Length: 380
Ligand SMILES: *Cc1c(COP(=O)(O)O)cnc(C)c1O
Image (cartoon, rainbow, N blue to C red; front, top):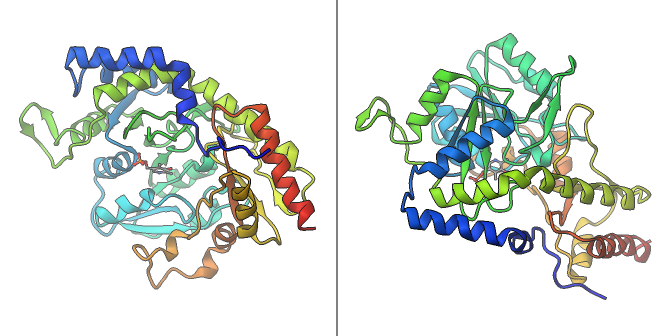
């Protein structure tokens, strides 16, 4: 029987389970009228810092602002080059361009979808000032290599962990860190569909550097170090207290949410293991996976036919992402040559993402995996 309740993300189902706490948290902010920079924001920052084991968390308006504020705080100058992956959500590069910095794209690894470290090192020029590794779809980029390259060439590292909050990276000496706490600054998003989502827009920056933390906190609030003393140009980008209060309810559930996503990922992996035309996502040996997306690579099939087939059965499937950044009209430059991005080009043509969220049940998973299998038997 076709199901009509399968969604890429089930925010309603998740809300129902925490409705009482969330509703009370929202009401208490309204009663307090401390809507901006209230105690809820301060407490959330402390609780998140504690969870991540990082010294400072600075909340802000959204994940895109977080990236922009990070670049502003590092004092980069127009014309400085910032290297990031060709295969990511455009927010990462948008802010580089906005600040008149120069985005430089590099290819990704075909197994993890994350930045390829050889390509990264080859892209460094005397103008390179920073690297933005993105921890795509829920697992960590090769941070040991990224940090070594950054150190060797004296570059800043901003980790974009909008899709991987809560995942752990283990270095070869056995030490483990949460994503977003290894570089100079980490950034994340609390967009509703992210692994830790609020009920509107939200974001945050993380750092272990006391000086940088002060600067970040000033920039998010009009460049004010002292009230009405504007030492530098900032922005107005704040997490509002209602969102912070909701996030305080959700943060203690983050590990459970991520575990639920992992269970879905593992169910899919074993169900699709024998389908030759599908390559299931790997978990790299140094990183845990929090499955922000479950992304398959298709081989030798008409991907659109698969997506249409699933749609008929009430199963949404999406392509993250259909166009490499180096080909996007807003970012295209003559020096970007397709042949330098073979993996990204291939991924954009072959990937397909299936529904994954914290509320998926056995029945839905069975229905989805059987439907995918049906496609291959009926098209064999
Ligand atoms: C969602 C996302 C962002 C942007 O976050 P917003 O809160 O929507 O501004 C940035 N980078 C990546 C990789 C994302 O997935």
